[in-house]
Image (cartoon, rainbow, N blue to C red; front, side, top):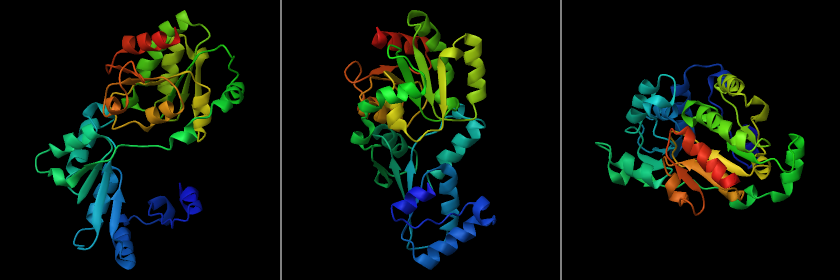
Length: 289
């Protein structure tokens, strides 16, 4: 993101060890805050909250603001229980917390010792107009060799455990039986990709699954799809479903996090229960049919 921020006119200072070669991250952040009289430090993950809190120890005139994008559950990732406990602990360190959905805001404010006045819910939002590119549909489909009549189911995001793409692959099996020309386009990257690739091979659907890898032209790729699916087990308020809705695509989403704050079931999308292969498959076939 360095080049993007620089293009917008923002000064970029990279504190990462791989850039500076120094492991004293806390000291370097503290020094920078003091030298530049920084008034607000804004963090976005449990580890950055922890680092910033250590760097700000003893300072009096700097406010620590943290945006909470997700309340991690033990099953969300490797070492999930330890990470979830760390995450809960770090919620007590900043001066103020921003939750990305109303539901999350209520959950955080209900934790013992966290005053409601320390929590503000600001729902995730996107620039809707930049994601509606129907004119790019044919060109993008041509890139991937997609036939005009092929229904394309899309997903964008990280390829990791909590996203439950394994369920989506299993759900795609009966969809492909009913719609042999259907294709599943998975946009993104992550460590689980080889494992999921093997699942697709075992299920006999690998020929109909398109792995795009990391892409920055998300709006163009969404234009090539017909149905968007978000099978996650846990979310804050998914930017991906907002982007798909802005692209004019019918969205199927698990009813987790703040999904029901933007989707009214059977009106502007379909909400399904989390963890159900059959629910995903039924919703996809309902829309395609």
